[in-house]
Image 1 (spheres, rainbow, N blue to C red):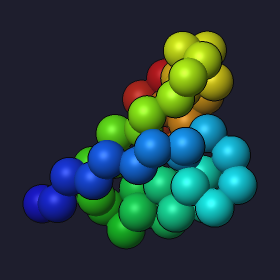
Image 2: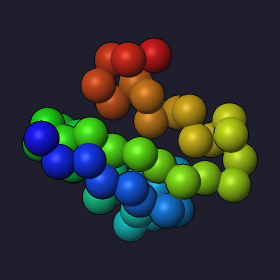
Image 3: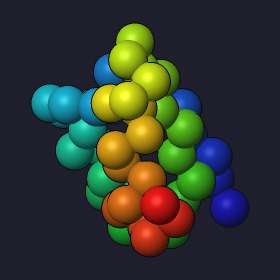
Image 4: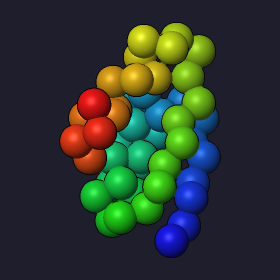
Length: 48
């Protein structure tokens, strides 16, 4: 299994890249300036 760190993953290109990696089964860590926005992607894989 691959683990990926994406900075700026809460919107734009970083967001889409992170979403697709999660769908492909990878573990993705997202770096975000705002903790609230950083938690939103948890629902991509049902972990929220």
